[in-house]
Length: 278
Image 1 (cartoon, rainbow, N blue to C red):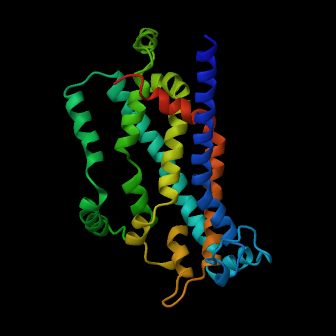
Image 2 (cartoon, rainbow, N blue to C red):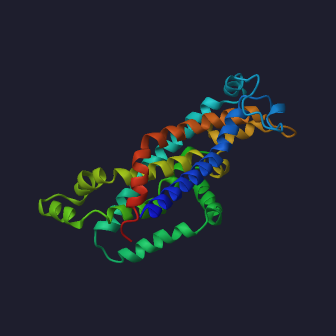
Image 3 (cartoon, rainbow, N blue to C red):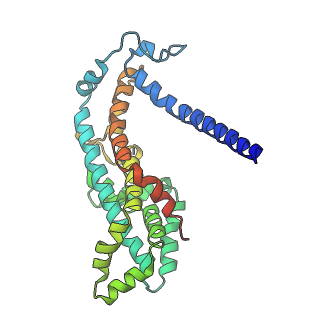
């Protein structure tokens, strides 16, 4: 019994050591980015790495706002990200409620067909999408990106998995009391789905905020470009201003960290709950 207890403790220690080592390895790139943001370009790639600069160049965080229209890029990215996130939460949760709690003809076939689009890479149909948006007169507009990203098959799948973990008896009792489907969705399902909605918010916010390919295809006017495209302006034909790039990258990371830290208590619960039922 004593040997079993000691073995269990040793296994726990080993597990914690491995987890700490993995955590440190994952944090190293972010620490290097923060360190590089306070260096001159000539010092960024010095070997051995000086993690703490002898003369921190705090001016990098001032220059990035004047070197490029960074504030405009941040506002554009925030606008697109917030609208897309809100629309995905609405459309995904609404469609998931129908697939999980309502009965209609060919429901399973329609759901499988919709979810099958996850397996199709976006690069396969991005050209037809671009031609379609251009025919609608939405080229070089934020609305094109918003329309294309307002719906998410992954979001519907995840929300449906969560809704299937909610007893059908709740919906049946509400229907007996005379509540409409819209009211059941709004009064019962949404309040119970905070963990799943928070998880979907994190996924959608991060993906949209960091999106580079979509905005680079649709946006050509400088005043309409997003933050990720703006970072390319620090890269010249013959040289790159790595200190400024890292400073701007740190700035771009802050909103993502804020969203994650605010919703992290629901994140694990939401991911676990979406796998309750198949």
